[in-house]
Amino acid sequence: MRISKILFLLLLLSSGTQTILNAQPFSRTDSLHGSENAYTTCYNVLKYDIRVRVFPDGKAIRGANTISAKILGNETVETIQLDLFSVIQIDSVLFEKKKISFTRDSNIFLVHFPQKLVPGQRFEVKVFFNGIPPEAKHAPWDGGFVWTKDINGNPWVGLACEGMGASCWLPCKDHLNDEPDEGMEMRLIVPEKLIGVSNGKLIAQKSMPDKTKQYHWKVTYPINPYNISINIGNYTHLSDSYTGAKGKLNLDYYVLAHNAYTALTHFAQVNGMLRCFETCFGPYPFWNDGYKLVETPYWGMEHQSCVAYGNNYKNNAWGFDFIIIHESGHEYFGNSLSMTDAAEMWIHESFTTYSETVYMECLYGKEKAFEYLTSQRKNIKNLEPMIGPYGVYYHGRTDNDIYYKGAWVLQTLRETLENDSVFFSFIKELTSKNELRNISTMEIINTCNRVSGKSWEVFFSQYLYHSSLPVVEYRVQQSGDKWQIHYRLRTDTPGLDLPVRFAMGNTLYKVTAGNQWQTLYVMNMDGEKISVDNSRVLVEVLQVF
Image (cartoon, rainbow, N blue to C red; front, top):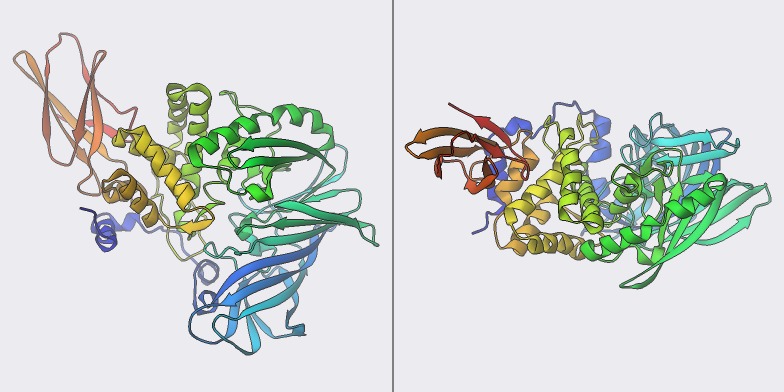
């Protein structure tokens, strides 16, 4: 019998409630940015049509965003909320080609319409803006624009704003659960000797009278605003293709001119990656927009159909380029299947980190992939729950557990299922049934329940909402010619059962441990010690006496 959603929430709150909440103080600005209210839930964004000129010498931008949207609900609307950092100036807001009033409050602004908009009405507002956006000091982690030069002294510009949100430079509805249904267009204007690259397909390019060049890009799928990408440089364009279940997929690579030869060879691994991911997760989700790698002056970022690449064409010790594989994995987990709130960032990072192991398995087999996963285990800190606080602007984690611990949670789920076919059916159903939509943790659990025919609420409660790991407690007693191994699983969430393996020499004894003490009897073998082999599941071990 499945546990209901209400009972699941009660279960989370029944023990260790304080671990669910983060001690980080939140300001009014954090709440305005991260929460929803009547001014945001009253409308749905349909499309962004952006025109922006970038001034590399002045580290400045100037442009306009035409926001197409639709009124939701049953009430008329006179005011909506949009987001934009206060460092960017709003020149004016147009509605039906006329200027209308707006009021600013920290990093948001309220747009006031001259008449009431009725339910179901489609409308457009055009916001003109200019300013000097935040400059990233350590992209992509702190976020903002990156202004630098290549080895030949040419301007080289990048943008990575996942943590900050796109409103650090772009007037938009900067909330994770509202992606423009009809996509986005970008007219990126750059100095004439440079190339401007953004998401989707290149529709046109033209020279402008003021010695600039405009590049028109179009995205036909929903896109999270933080994925909207700006890249400017002395690029060379390389082309390739991948043939998969849906036919031919265009592969485009924009790299600095002096790296063209190296990139052509190094990016050959993309085809094998796409084949592996298509087998395990389904066809590449942004097929009509193509797949693109763009060389950036920072390590990398999962910009939809425009993956940022800055790993200097280096493979890791396992023979692949981590940035290519990880950031491309985000096309499935993060860009196609997306979280609804930053509290659930684990959805993006845990599945994507595990996609690296999946890729290893495609290349070298299951055991080699498990070695790779094991190499990441040392990075797990268990400092705070993987689920963060809801409804606020929150990117203040003190660890990387949503990556490495999250991957190990999935491995533990796989081990507990004891059926790889069911495990990968669960993953593939997630990606196929939730393609191009936002999803919650509860929906992931429900999918796992449905595919496996078992209940997993207790499992996910322990690993997502508590920082501590389950602990296997055991003690050993000699009884004649046998050993008695007494064992149990100590957890924050009652009712969790996990597979545990006891090792005696080269012999393994597999049992299922729960909260109650149980006993395993094994033959006494002189000189052999009994230990717990926790190499396959994410638990701690404690021998008690």
